Length: 444
Image 1 (cartoon, one colour):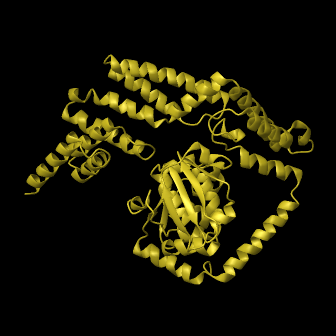
Image 2 (spheres, rainbow, N blue to C red; image 1 turned 90 degrees about the vertical axis):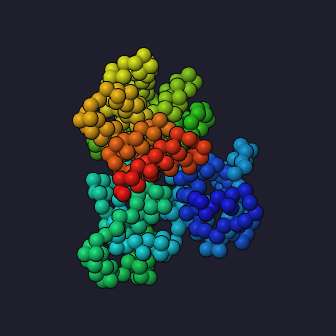
């Protein structure tokens, strides 16, 4: 991101791949517009709060010339969004990559073909990639080459969206993969032709799908919606016109009258999904409930059904109880409630609050207790940091725990993240200076 910063709000233009620019801006929470200069009339795409707005088709965005230039501005207004369609940022990026030329994607991946891939835990949030990621679930190291033919676009998306990282192969592994790679024609024109033939065959098959297959495809595409609003194509507020239109589409597709002659399993799936859609529709039609759902989702994450909504209200009440216990000094009791909430919801905020409560008890622990409990708190904070940013208080604690275990480099890394956000933070600067000093003394 550092190399893009000088270009923001300047007259300078960037020469970079569009999908890389979009991914970089999205990952750092940038809010603004990307102006695109592609030889014809310039146009722009808005990036804000994890979403993208555009009226341009994905086949245009995926096939932008290598000579395309970009200008990045941070100033945007709601007026600019009028007439543009809103997309989830990750789904937008994936759609662009789906429309990119095969050779361009493989050109970027080719240097990594002999390495491995490791998918980050937060990739579980990418509901639209659920089916694509199923073959990789449970694998810590995924061989890139053996998965390129069917999943090269998914692999590229995971890497560029920072939902996965490259893990270097050993010399022995790399030699074996290179041998297979040399015998393969995956990067050849022949393979590209075969892919086109397969695509045409798939499209032809699509035209002759049976009614049951159509219903299955509809369910596969819609069952993994993110939250009650997005089920009806809404961002985070209720719009009667849009929601009713989408609800009618669902009813027309899987109404009980359409299920005659369908296998019992598919019919049951359709009936359950239709019932769920009806519940969600009635739920968000109530303005007070819709507002409450938005509030809860901001605190705890997506809500997908009435059952989840009612559960989340219970957990929210429990969070308030635990917070009250912590305020009056009942830290052990507060930690137990926070732990219960985390085990039920997997909400990282509850896990963080649990450890912050436990830390208040740290002065009472002897050195043996500290060794055990510090390790647990450290591991929890590392787990949380993979999903969300730690609070300032948590970062200080993590740095202190690293120092306790004499892991000075990691302690300094944590303090550097604080100082990057808050250059004038004297506490972090003092801790860092002290650690460097004592570390040098110990080495001497």
